[in-house]
View (tube, one colour):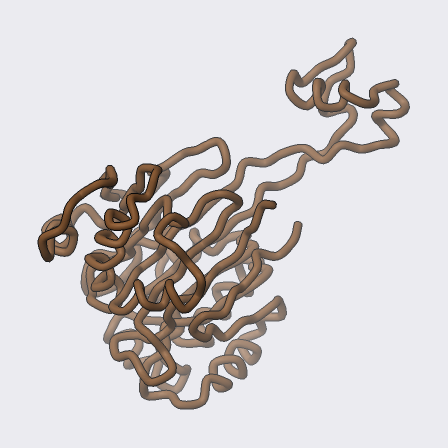
Length: 300
């Protein structure tokens, strides 16, 4: 059974708290898993969340601050210890190659799995599979940072009444889907376009063109809101977003479900982020992330 959901492993920003681990997010997309920004303690959070190393097909790191990458050594070594049977790809800013090298080989271990290093150096598509395309957009942070976006190809929704009128039924329905035409009837005549789903992951950044491009039309947007609106100047100084800014981005982009995360330890009451997101005019589904929750991608 295909599953599309976000497993939240950690939600703290620079300093973890008693209730919030450093960052970590696993996107389950049908039969694949994409691990985003594994911060310190991610391996243990995976255990608590029921996530195995075998669930990881790709690792995407937005940038090389510790709360987004210090979990890499443990995760990579666990992938090898468990002898994951499939190749794993790692994507990260090319400018941080020296950091990735240090983290990958932080200690001695036996390599049993092929880890393909596929760094990102510019905006645009960097991975394509039959099920999705992955693209990156540069963000605005004190160190180079990229956000990531998954796009499912558009498909077709078959229209029963048109199929019946054209005399197409049974196995012929699958045939016209595969071949695009059957007995002079084109696929477009008996179907309508079903837009592919979209997911975006936006971490440490100020407002910039990349944020808006990543969020546009997303079914599920995971975005940092490190600070509250009262601390907007502090957010800008350190290269971050406020709850209101993140929600306004989602509002303008037509996001269906918004997940706010990456909270500063200075805030004890997470409900303030929800209030400020709603005050910014976001009316879609809203989740204030907590460690170990699962957030489904909205149904079509």
